[in-house]
Amino acid sequence: MATQFGFLPSWPLQASPSLWVAVALIAAVLVGELFAKTGWLPRMTGYVLTGLAAGPGMLAVVGGSTSTEWRVIIELALGILLFELGTRVNLRWLMTNRWLVVSSLFEASLSFATVYLILRYFGTREAIAATAATIAMATSPSVVMRIAAELRAQGQVTERLMLHTALNTIYAAVGVNLMVGVLHHEFRGSLVEAVVYPAYLLCGSVLAGAGFALVFRRLERWLGDHEEVLSFLLLGMIALTVSVSAMLRVPPLLPLLLAGIVVRQIRGRPLVYPPHFGSAGAVLIIVMFVVSGMSIPMDQLARGAAVAAALVCGRVLAKIVGVTAIARPSGASWRQAAALGVALAPMSGVALLLTLDTATLFPEFGASVMSALLGAIVVLELAGPVMTFAALKLAGEHHR
Image (cartoon, rainbow, N blue to C red; front, side, top):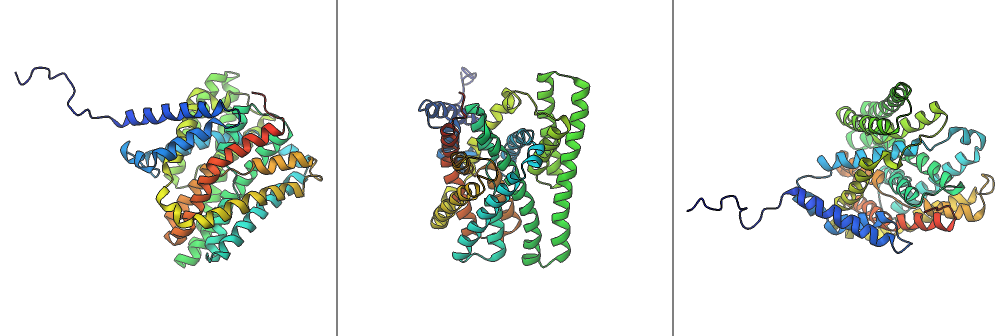
């Protein structure tokens, strides 16, 4: 009799981790659609908000953390967006209108200086303040690419936004690699490592990016115009690059952005594929935003709330002033420049990974500085997409 009805599940029911992943994804999609129906809120704000509501505890429930399985998903999704962003960068445009480079450098430098001075005012050590300010230069490529795709945005502001975002990401990634050398020298006292480690990271990134681009271009010529096959190929190559980069201990973000830029220059025209290379890529993007929200340690944020508020205000103002100051020479109207400055506000995946990586390498980075940066990232991960969304709509470049 004891064996009767043995086919029934035990009580209480034991939910598998996949159930909670499914629930989180369904909730994220529904909240995202609810936001989209307002007309002024982007879907991705709903995705991130769902992740924040679930909190870091959800990652433990589903059996992972941002440093293991979930980190791979974030890097893979971010890699797709960075490669896609790189293919939108037209270096010929930069050569024709060099004021675009001046505008980008001035805006990034002003952002760096503002964040650096704020952190120094609050008593942060010089090297740590400089590293945090370098991270803060980056505009979120994931937010920019996702909002542009959602609005089907096209025009001067959109193209300049893509260009500034790509260049800011390069400045931040290269700058952090160089600052790692400074931190090695300051906290470890090793001059050799201070020189060799940044050189290894930069050379590895350039070689990986160039190798990716050359291999893809050869395979593309061999396969011909088979959009679906090439989309699958790109997803596979991006996943391979993320895995190989992890083996070599080289961050995969810069190589994939550089690969996209090189592919665009070799082809002479952008890739014409579905956004995020089809449905598989789109699902990964949604998962990335949800997991990014989950990965923020909310309990740490209160410690750096005042500094975070100052960083957010100073950084956003620096972006707007930096772009509008060079508006006329670069060929943009005041309205376009103001819209571009607002659209450059978001911080998200790249800044989050750079912050977590730096804090892991150097515990001296400090809980207070990390809390302030994470606080700024949370605010701009939620408000940033709305600002970019509104800026592109007000610029009249949306077509949805």
